[in-house]
Length: 363
Image (cartoon, rainbow, N blue to C red; front, top):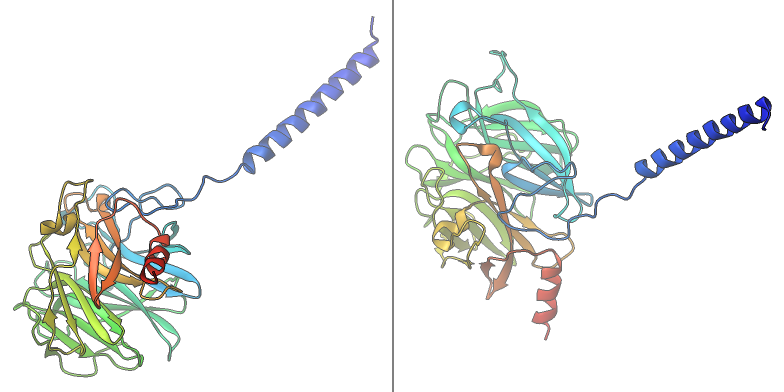
């Protein structure tokens, strides 16, 4: 029969063994491998961030800076429709591969019960775009801004600044732009020499207009001019310059409902622009929509892929005004054919697409 001392010692060993097993078990759990990273972009399907939450960055754009892509977009408040003021500010995500995105949170938010501050809850903040000013070393966020209580009658351009692309951004001011009613959908385009241009839809006649911004990018420095040969009611403009040619991808004006894409090229931002054939082809099986509705999306931005020649990505938004946070994204690669855009629907793809295109072009 074992002695009491032996029994107590055995219990002590059992307790210590239990502690060790628990410790290393918990450590193993804590150090378990992460979920495999996403390898592909799947247009029109729900896109999750690193926290397994749907990405909340609508109508936005992407800035590349020091090896990181920054995706800025409209932060939509859960449970609210557009009519119930779903705009909560600007949300930012970061990525190194354009596929996997880390949530950077709100970089500019609205405030409740703050009548002395423009960005009070109930205002509308739409289509944010961020640029970097190499002279001032500041990052500037621009957004279509409708003050609280004014509806869609007068549209300002809101401006916020930051010392870092990751924010936070501090609201600076707003300006009307081309008319007493302001301007609507817009693009902020930096040319090769560093000049920044504001291209937008003028209210209320919906003419497409342009003005150069000051060197500090804070305000326009010239009178707005109507761009030559771009149709009125051309919304959602996304502009890029490739091999000396400007390309403008946009849409018609049908509210939240999708319509056929518009595409123009020019060798001068002020025009004349030439209307090209619709560059979109293919069919969106997710929503059962073709190019007559631009697959259910509306253009928002064109991303230049760093490190690859003539590699660009067209960003489109699938809007859900009754529940904006449920809006989705269509990202598709742009292929250059005879110096013109070709954007074909793909169920899935990644940046290897461009490497394969480069390989095929050399055959």
